[in-house]
Length: 141
Image 1 (cartoon, rainbow, N blue to C red):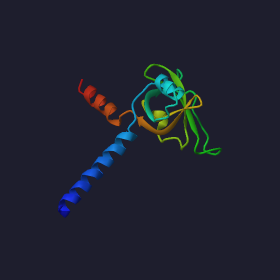
Image 2 (image 1 turned 180 degrees about the vertical axis):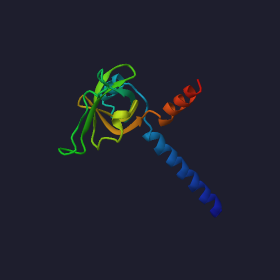
Image 3 (image 1 turned 135 degrees about the horizontal axis):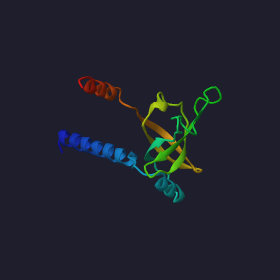
Image 4 (image 1 turned 90 degrees about the horizontal axis):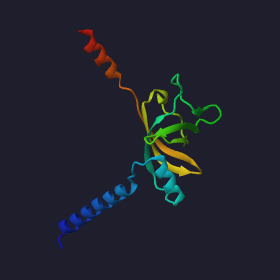
């Protein structure tokens, strides 16, 4: 065999290994109900859950607990998924910036001891451009 054939085979093998490891790390989008079922079955794979923060009539977040003086790496809040199931979420990192302003939250993690332990939090904040577009469109009326 030529050296170029061996190098080509090694490159293909490396590409296959990279693809296989990235597919193994991919998680799926589920509801809290399915995350609970997976945990009860012993499946501890990471999943994504999409939801909104639970807020009162004045727009204040309910169930949010973060005290950086006591423990800066402990943040907990209530999240309501797309099926309107409420679940306590624990995040062992500092509270994300602009968390209170977020419209939608995507968390990655799994259920542990009846709480959802999040590894990552992705926030969908209101766009700063939407309000400007509305003002520009209504200014001409």
